[in-house]
Image (cartoon, rainbow, N blue to C red; front, side, top):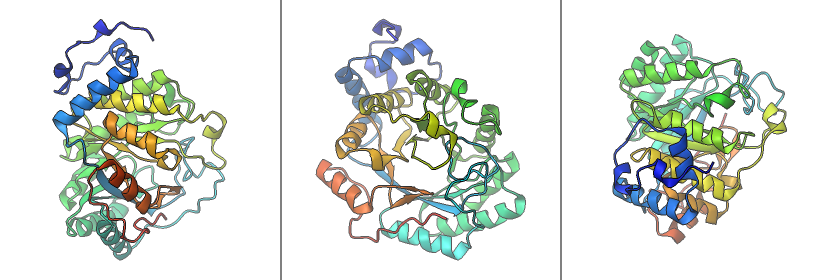
Length: 342
């Protein structure tokens, strides 16, 4: 990975507008820049598209946990592996709305509802649509991740008031088959197309630390950045240690500087997308998170739990953002249990 810098346009201002024709040599040239130069470019683009001192806060709730028929090799909720996660039924709407209300009181502006399905049945989707409408009535942005969708299902969610649909590509097309066999990358792309056609905003990113190489991380970013419309939200997850799943055999936590480089490249390649530090922040030092914010990350999940894995506590996040002089709606005095998983 030693592509010369002239493989990309040396004028940083040309990156302010989204482009959709990134090549592998260009992605590698960005990633290989001296660290200070890469961060300078990313921070400049970030400042011209976002408030560099503001972080978006979101809350995530597992409304139906475990028992998923997919064999995703990283997932605690797959029925293929003997993890400690017990399958549950779909939550009642009242419990979901109450959790969303607490999340809003704690500072979350977006509420995300996740269900461990391959794809929802129409009867199940009816109930989710009721939850979406009720959460929307609280004045929050709404997001859901329910597995694969048909275009009609995506349209129904949009009509119920859903703002975002999350459906991650997880990794590069080349590495994908090593971690999932029950759903193809094209299945994921098809669902993303249905979501976009229904008028929903797209939340799509992936996971690092599963044994993939840097080239796979760049391949994932290229896949996202070369979509006809960039995802409005790009979550970057660091794989969480999970009992009894295959990824345990290949997982390796990313080098912190390598992670910051990835965030910076994501910011440059998708200048107007929100880049979210998602799962795995409990493994990150305050200094690493601060570097990620400087590199262009501008969103986090708040609360103690993300679906079935740990997350930094709300007061720790508030303390960090306060020391950095960054704003959010996060309130350190609010209840810590803003997320309830399963």
